[in-house]
Image (cartoon, rainbow, N blue to C red):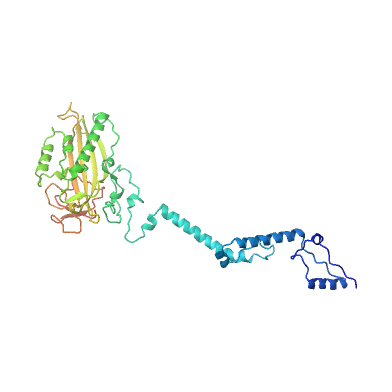
Length: 406
């Protein structure tokens, strides 16, 4: 029986062998039997390129394993550098690890997104901490546009209690403008036989009077409203003399609070330096030529603390709300007995919320809610001091009314 010599590989002639390409004795014997029987095919050895690539990939695996730290080698064996399916079979490892890696990636992305959102808007987390509150007017609530007409309804109730840091929390005044800037003047136009410049002067003087009588810090602390007095026409009968008398010796018939906002400095102090204001101003011709009348309707909200605890950051905060509606007039001195550059008071009405009733000392006295009330109990109906849809003129009946909120 003839034998067929094993096929010679080019690498064998050059002296290079390959363990990966060697044929086992069992394979060779099986081949000889098949050849004797007239069948079988010569087993194919890997090509020189295949054996070279295999050897290079094995060397890369060994080098990668050598570079791992001792603790990494202890944890797991290095993953082969071979592509899936080259000599490792199906990528069963990736099939098993794929869902786990996907879930891990999703969790990491969600965590990063959550941290980024909290950094951009920390209130999302802080608002849920016990005892923590944020002021809506500073974050979530945008300032209200200027009032241009009488509101049709009272503002909605807001949640929260005032603090020293946020004295307007829980009040519609959170969204109101502050101080003199809240008193916006309409565009002046000639009317009632008065020029555009005259109307502009009447508007400006009316605003100056409101600021001097209701926003001057010295006046709010119980001082004399000298700037407001200087704007009134001395030729108008009774107004200036009565106001001076009320400031000097207030009583039931002479009450400076009809025109001026003042608090007893021995009792209370402003919580900060901000007073919230909302209202509107209009003008029209007077009853006869040479007169322009300006109508102003504004609500002032004063946050207050007790004077003996002004430095106590934990003390209570009270709010007193005062609404004033007044009509001033500017007269042409050529047609009227009037002083140029001064205004007269044609009409004035006011109401207050959260102040002691029947106390006639020339000051407002707010109730703080944590102590005994001062003055006599309110006898009038309960009203919402923030409801600017009500008219003031003709409402007064001499009774002190309760407030539904401050």
